[in-house]
Length: 139
Image 1 (tube, rainbow, N blue to C red):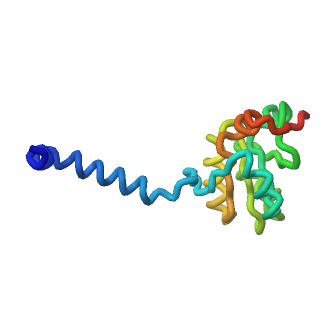
Image 2: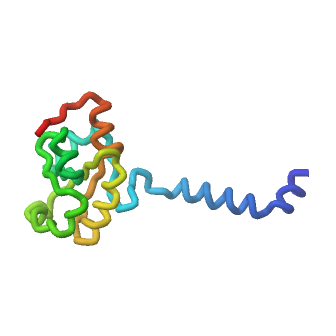
Image 3: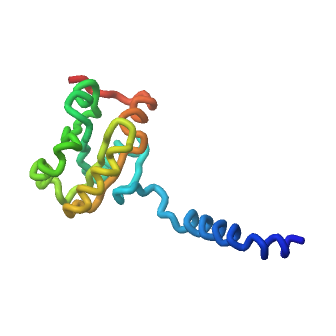
Protein backbone atom coordinates (compact mmCIF):
# COMPACT_ATOMS: atom_id res chain seq x y z
CA UNK A 1 0.00 0.00 0.00
CA UNK A 2 2.74 2.46 0.96
CA UNK A 3 4.83 1.48 -2.05
CA UNK A 4 1.88 2.12 -4.36
CA UNK A 5 1.29 5.54 -2.77
CA UNK A 6 4.99 6.38 -3.07
CA UNK A 7 5.09 5.42 -6.74
CA UNK A 8 2.00 7.44 -7.59
CA UNK A 9 3.23 10.47 -5.63
CA UNK A 10 6.96 10.26 -6.36
CA UNK A 11 7.21 14.04 -6.77
CA UNK A 12 6.21 14.52 -3.11
CA UNK A 13 9.10 12.33 -2.02
CA UNK A 14 11.50 14.18 -4.31
CA UNK A 15 10.40 17.52 -2.83
CA UNK A 16 10.63 16.17 0.72
CA UNK A 17 14.14 14.87 0.06
CA UNK A 18 15.20 18.20 -1.43
CA UNK A 19 13.85 20.12 1.57
CA UNK A 20 15.58 17.78 4.01
CA UNK A 21 18.87 18.16 2.13
CA UNK A 22 18.56 21.95 2.15
CA UNK A 23 17.91 21.92 5.88
CA UNK A 24 20.79 19.55 6.51
CA UNK A 25 23.33 21.54 4.50
CA UNK A 26 22.15 25.04 5.39
CA UNK A 27 25.05 26.87 7.03
CA UNK A 28 22.53 28.08 9.61
CA UNK A 29 23.15 31.47 11.09
CA UNK A 30 23.84 33.11 7.74
CA UNK A 31 21.86 36.00 6.36
CA UNK A 32 21.14 36.77 2.73
CA UNK A 33 24.13 39.09 2.72
CA UNK A 34 26.50 36.36 3.83
CA UNK A 35 27.02 37.61 7.38
CA UNK A 36 26.83 35.46 10.50
CA UNK A 37 23.84 36.09 12.76
CA UNK A 38 24.65 36.70 16.42
CA UNK A 39 22.42 37.16 19.44
CA UNK A 40 22.32 40.19 21.72
CA UNK A 41 24.19 38.15 24.32
CA UNK A 42 26.98 37.27 21.88
CA UNK A 43 27.53 40.83 20.65
CA UNK A 44 29.63 42.13 23.59
CA UNK A 45 31.73 38.94 23.60
CA UNK A 46 32.54 39.17 19.89
CA UNK A 47 33.13 42.91 20.16
CA UNK A 48 35.62 42.43 23.00
CA UNK A 49 37.29 39.23 21.81
CA UNK A 50 37.73 40.23 18.19
CA UNK A 51 37.92 44.04 18.51
CA UNK A 52 34.88 44.19 16.24
CA UNK A 53 33.44 47.51 15.08
CA UNK A 54 29.74 48.05 15.67
CA UNK A 55 28.01 49.71 12.68
CA UNK A 56 24.44 50.94 13.17
CA UNK A 57 22.83 51.27 9.75
CA UNK A 58 19.58 52.86 10.92
CA UNK A 59 18.63 56.42 10.01
CA UNK A 60 20.06 59.30 12.04
CA UNK A 61 16.64 59.80 13.66
CA UNK A 62 16.40 56.14 14.71
CA UNK A 63 19.98 56.22 15.98
CA UNK A 64 19.40 59.31 18.14
CA UNK A 65 16.37 57.67 19.82
CA UNK A 66 18.67 55.00 21.21
CA UNK A 67 21.79 53.16 20.07
CA UNK A 68 24.27 50.64 21.39
CA UNK A 69 27.32 52.19 23.02
CA UNK A 70 30.39 52.61 20.78
CA UNK A 71 28.38 52.14 17.59
CA UNK A 72 29.17 54.07 14.44
CA UNK A 73 26.09 55.41 12.62
CA UNK A 74 26.22 54.88 8.85
CA UNK A 75 22.64 54.82 7.50
CA UNK A 76 21.95 52.13 4.91
CA UNK A 77 20.74 54.73 2.40
CA UNK A 78 24.21 56.33 2.30
CA UNK A 79 26.35 53.29 3.14
CA UNK A 80 27.91 52.88 -0.31
CA UNK A 81 28.85 56.54 -0.55
CA UNK A 82 30.34 56.47 2.97
CA UNK A 83 32.49 53.35 2.66
CA UNK A 84 35.58 55.56 3.13
CA UNK A 85 34.60 55.89 6.79
CA UNK A 86 34.91 52.12 7.18
CA UNK A 87 38.24 51.74 5.36
CA UNK A 88 40.25 52.20 8.56
CA UNK A 89 38.33 49.22 9.98
CA UNK A 90 38.78 47.01 6.91
CA UNK A 91 40.81 44.33 8.70
CA UNK A 92 38.45 44.13 11.66
CA UNK A 93 35.18 42.24 12.01
CA UNK A 94 32.08 44.42 11.57
CA UNK A 95 28.86 43.88 13.52
CA UNK A 96 25.88 45.34 11.65
CA UNK A 97 22.87 46.57 13.56
CA UNK A 98 19.47 47.83 12.40
CA UNK A 99 16.09 48.03 14.11
CA UNK A 100 14.87 44.46 13.54
CA UNK A 101 17.66 42.69 11.69
CA UNK A 102 16.13 43.00 8.22
CA UNK A 103 18.21 45.84 6.75
CA UNK A 104 21.46 44.41 8.08
CA UNK A 105 21.43 41.62 5.50
CA UNK A 106 21.29 44.16 2.70
CA UNK A 107 24.13 46.14 4.30
CA UNK A 108 26.17 42.93 4.61
CA UNK A 109 25.71 42.31 0.89
CA UNK A 110 27.01 45.80 0.08
CA UNK A 111 30.01 45.37 2.36
CA UNK A 112 30.79 41.87 1.03
CA UNK A 113 30.75 43.28 -2.49
CA UNK A 114 33.31 45.86 -1.33
CA UNK A 115 35.71 43.27 0.12
CA UNK A 116 34.74 43.48 3.80
CA UNK A 117 35.00 39.88 4.86
CA UNK A 118 34.21 39.15 8.52
CA UNK A 119 30.64 40.36 8.95
CA UNK A 120 28.13 39.75 11.72
CA UNK A 121 24.48 40.79 12.01
CA UNK A 122 22.66 41.33 15.29
CA UNK A 123 19.74 38.92 14.95
CA UNK A 124 16.56 40.85 15.77
CA UNK A 125 18.42 44.18 15.73
CA UNK A 126 18.10 46.85 18.39
CA UNK A 127 14.65 45.45 19.19
CA UNK A 128 16.23 42.20 20.44
CA UNK A 129 18.89 44.18 22.31
CA UNK A 130 16.16 46.16 24.10
CA UNK A 131 14.14 43.01 24.76
CA UNK A 132 17.15 41.63 26.67
CA UNK A 133 17.11 44.84 28.78
CA UNK A 134 20.56 45.82 27.53
CA UNK A 135 21.48 49.53 27.63
CA UNK A 136 20.87 52.02 24.84
CA UNK A 137 22.46 55.47 24.66
CA UNK A 138 20.12 58.35 23.74
CA UNK A 139 21.20 61.25 21.56
